[in-house]
Image 1 (tube, rainbow, N blue to C red):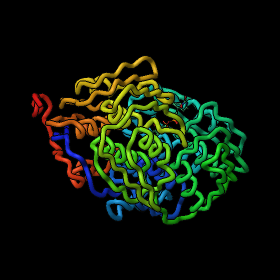
Image 2 (image 1 turned 45 degrees about the horizontal axis):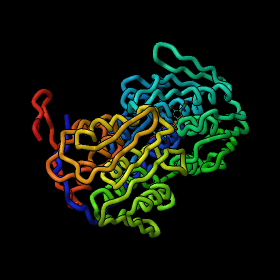
Image 3 (image 1 turned 90 degrees about the vertical axis):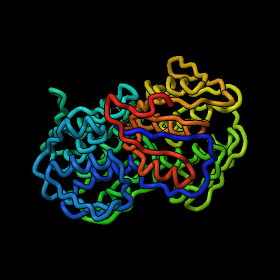
Image 4 (image 1 turned 180 degrees about the horizontal axis):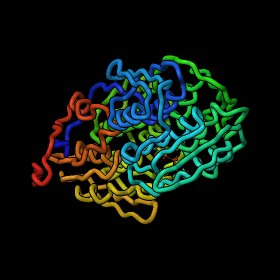
Length: 428
Ligand code: UD1
């Protein structure tokens, strides 16, 4: 078991380079197997979720060659199996993208039903509805989804719920279906556009990604290419919150400021200073922030993946704040941990009411999920004294070199391995 021991209370300052987008990479790696030629993917984040998906891809027979830490070559011509085992899917939910990719490529896929961060029920009915509309027979049995089609045919699909995963999964299957597919009410997140751009760079014909309607003309074959993944919107947002929470001054390099607009606007609203440049953003703050209301929305709204980090800021802001979580029903698991630091937070169904406190106290904090773990780390860094953030394996699913990047900004943070039952720093 791994943990961070943090001596907080310092203003963090300096430069940080943002890694490639994890959620784009997950779709892109799955999409890469649809091609029988070699695809080179650059700016891949070195995080555990990506490494698990690469293992899953390799286990079904694709050639996966690591060129360097952030570059991988994939060749899907040697795939010999359409079965993606539970071992992978229980570790990363997004292995379900192999359903759309294998169905599009081979007309057949069997993938275990997804696990992933426990932030809500997270059904996949919209994915399956899309596959069925394309002509696949889809069944679920013994914890597996089977999708099979002799011939995938383009269709008109209206998603009942705006879903990132369903949009990407259906888009991939339809990329190699016969004729035109129109998907309405799709998600517009930056990583959806990135997956579409990637597939187009291999010869797919996908139009409208980033709008409410995606139109796809199926192609028979994709060709090899080299593609570089966009920067991670959520990693960037996390460092922006960190600058604000620690009254610091951080320049984030390798970002697309447009993708950060909702986060920038909220930070400005609470009193931080945000300056945008071509491919960098600087966030600084020298005073106590003020409370606000945050409502999570699909892109371009405020991302649900940023609400825990925002809570870490608001717990110390002046006045009363409200966070309304509209996407996932179990996304307040970090609240109990922040309360250990003295935070005054009341949760009623999907709304958290936060009465800002002036000073928090250090504590031992248990990470319940990926983004909550990032939020607890921010809270610990903003709190004077020694805190411990445990179960950081969750955090490392999505943040590359998190502790190293934080140290480079002046944080005192140590990563420790703890033998179960003999946790160090029991009394922080
Ligand atoms: C993706 C992101 C995740 C982010 C989320 C919302 C990846 C790998 N993960 O997750 O980090 O928090 O988008 O921005 O990109 N839903 C259904 N039926 C479906 C599909 C979804 O009811 O078939 C519901 C979900 O329960 C949720 C909402 O739709 O309430 C949005 O989920 P979705 O956009 O699909 O999230 P993910 O793709 O799982």
